[in-house]
Image 1 (cartoon, rainbow, N blue to C red):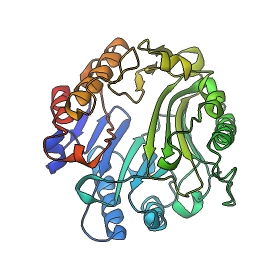
Image 2: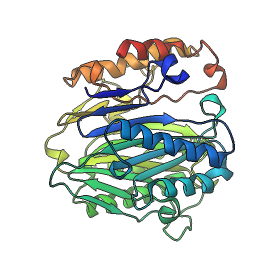
Image 3: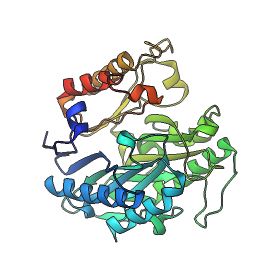
Image 4: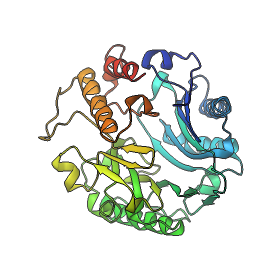
Amino acid sequence: MGLHLRRGTPFEAEYGASSAVQSGPRTFVSGLVSPDGDVASQAQRVFVDITSALAACGAFPADVVRTRIFYTNAGDLPTIGAAHRAAFGAVRPAATFVQVTRLPFGARVTVEAEALHAPAGARRREAAGAPNAAEYGYSGVVQVGDDVWLAGAMARRDNGTLVAPRDALAQAAYIARVVTERLDSCGATPADIVSTRHYTAVAYHDVSTFEGRRPVMAPGEPTSAGITVEGVGHPELALVLDMEAVVGAASRRRNLRTGRTYEVEHCYSRSVRVGDVVYVSGSTSVNLKEIVDWPYDAYHQALQTLGVICHTVAQQGLPVRDIVRTRSYVVGVENLAPGSDRGLAAEARALR
């Protein structure tokens, strides 16, 4: 393990987290917030803090390959997008923008980042091909060597028009075609996908989009995380999907499952290892019988969930101390109250 950057923030103290972790050529920056002021000043300070965290780890904005931006007010998106563009200039990471109900400390925006210092001889390639890509300063796909990051894909054409408004299944099928085209431009196939996340707008929470996504899930059975969010940029858009792939992963990946029927039926794995990197699916306290353990108990659910993550990392042959990033989604404002999330805090400290 490389460098853990801690800035003495309340978040770090409570959760045993780091603002950034550097491991080899990779740097992971936590979701940072700056809750004071209007959204423009919050976004600007967050990007300044990201740049500072990268520098402390020996990385630069030019190394950033992926950003994820979570915001609470739909009307703030253009302002946040403009700040993203200003922060990175000619560098265009793969980005995903999603609206959530609430963020820590009442912030209106949080941004996380991943950077990769290109190995000798590896070329960085960026391609736009995404709605608002030029306006918000991001790329539809970023490739460094064999590693590929895909921006959040949605059912929106490059000219801004929507595809199959309000039809979640048709949107998912369209997104799968977009993803396949982006992979093809990098010399990769769906069998090379190692990690996926699909963010579904709450209005479409009860609609299954798996059959539409099947073409990009079935070939490689990557990790998967499905998260219900407030929105994905337009009320008639149902979901946004982002992914990572490794060219050639199809022939050298190691997939592990827990034995849950749901994993088999939805063509995903609990973890995937390619080389020295392990990708882990979004995990919950659902047991092998598809029953939620510790219902309505955020503390014990958190302990069990993180235990599942630690177990699959160990099964892949890595020690728990090699975990470099966790990301938690909490349902219900009441579970953010002091003490209700102590399970996350206790387990995070145990990982250190």
